Image (cartoon, rainbow, N blue to C red):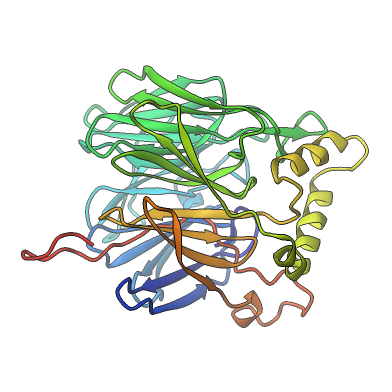
Length: 397
């Protein structure tokens, strides 16, 4: 939690599928802003809270207590405030790779201030990062840059040769996911337009068609791609995961989870989390904050097309929606977190029936200095799911 410009925190949600019991713990960290994505070391001891504030923040994955904090400005200066270490890929229990400035850096939890620059990433503003099935390639998406403009690119970094490649695409793609067994990955279009025609920092949601590209990590070649017309509710994606049968990703702008069939890469299913009218009425404070934020990003007269486009994207809803989406290891449960409604939902997969929907507490419980009328949402964004570790006599669950 909380996105790009807000607070920075972590929510741990524990769920027992047998009994339906759940519990949660929430922690925000002072002096850090723009909490964006979490990742956890393979041994599950430590977590990393990626953020948009040029800081590396590591925490105990069980207690959420902060363990280390390092300014990335000691390593390399960015050319824009939004250019930060939002994601990290773990290579083992102590070492991870992240983007800082114009480079990719190898971090070690045992000596976090001794980072090693392993190469240039070649993108304007790198974002989500994943490791391919073999562990040889790091693949990463890229955001549009406030000064350099539209990205329309993804990156592939060879850990063996320490050489990066930039792959040009028709659209900007923030987020990526790797195939679980083959050296290919999927990049999802994230289509926005600059306010006033030039400001790529204060962007607006674009009511355009959306893409998903299947890319070979070894050659950089686009193997297949899926396209959804502008009326398909697949705008402003966030988390993406993959099952044996489908590519699954959530969309905070449109309020949906899209599931694309991997065999034909054409047919798709939709889980619709767009709130009904009573729920929208109950979230009036969220809606007021959402509309106010929109006016701070663009002027209504010269940018009226952006406001109309945003209403088309959200299908008339004045709050944003689901940003977290993860599948359990045995592919029986799908977890989502809805930022706008401040809820966490567990679905039975692949039936997509609701098993649990939990309402979460208000933000003021953790940040008491906020005024009573402030936006009450915790600010869910990217997530990671840790399924139970299987024993020798037990399958993965």
